[in-house]
Amino acid sequence: MARNGIELAYGRGALHLTLPDEAEPTVIRKAVLPKLPDNAAAVRHAFDQPIGAKPLRELARGRKSACILICDITRPVPNRLFLRPMVETMVESGIPLDRITILVATGLHRPNLGEELAEVVGDPWVMANVRVENHYARNTEDHVDLGPTRTRGTPVSINRILVEADLRIATGLVEPHFMAGWSGGRKVVAPGVAGHATIRTFHSARFMEDPLAIQCNLVGNPLHEEQLEIVRMVGELYALNTVIDEDRDLVHVTFGEIIQSHLAAVGFIEHATRIKVGRRFKTVVTSSAGYPLDKTYYQTVKGMVTPIDILEPGGTLIIASRCSEGFGSPEFREAQARLVELGPERFLATLTAKSLAEIDEWQTEMQLKPMRVGRIQLYTEGLDQEELRITGVEIIRSVDAAIADSVTRHGDGAVAIIPEGPYVVPVHEVG
Figure (tube, rainbow, N blue to C red):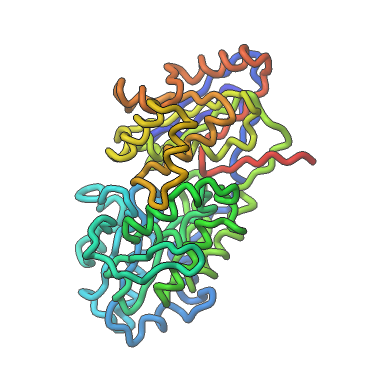
């Protein structure tokens, strides 16, 4: 790639970079994975050759109802490729169409409605023929109380539609997640369709400050372990897991028992996504992975966290995020305002004594991690002046100018560039 042909994922397009002459770029991408020659055949094969389970057509026989979980707008899951064949297989096996519900696993995010819901579902036939509902974590009456987890005492309540369904299937995208290790699988259940107290408990500081609660790690990760216990409490659960490339094309799909099928998808993608880098950099340039992840500043924080292992202490991390939908929830806005008012140390001190985190303040807590390492600079076009102020980071008007300034300031032309943001996890390993 030509040195000045580098682009960052930004909004629905890309941000072209023009580097200074003295810059020596290292572009860090996922390994190139072969595209599937026939998406429909791959989905059918996953249904027919599941992992740790019977084929979907057999699982559906004798069932009276089904619930299919799908991710919300923040993740580009290719639902259009598998929802209709999944529903049709269920109907062919005897489940009445009017007893099948698709439930959008919003967690504590806002609901997806109207045209946005149609975009998430991705299939007009499904929208016209299948009941589609959003999860509302704050509606206590919508949930079934399953009691506390044994290990850490998290109170567990899960959406009644899922719990009471005869056949339960989670669907999602397997990609690095900056606190739970990997997205998809068990994470679509909790926090996806969990009650607010469940989500707020395992997003409290005692989980979030654990050094093993990081991207690409499941071993000893307290969030992952809690999610595993929660799905076991729910009972019989299956999952369809997808992996996509930079073009958002399907490269892998698994179906089966929720834990085993998810681990199989992780095993496929982890070596392509977790990229070993032999040095640290004083200038790191990244993105929030473009649309839909860079719709809000809330989601942008993920892109700040994933590259910190290769950021030289005292270095500069430059991130570009469109923030086309603005800042995020009112609760996140309030947490960011407290961060700016109190400063990082005092803000963290207000969190550590809580057993129940305030909604969305955990994202502000995660922002503290890159702030401890170096200088964070943000390029965006979607925030107003007050929102820019409460980001708590330095606002830049030009990514190109910021790169040139950082190279000069640090006296080091080496620049790490991560075009796809948090979908790629660079890890500092020598040798």
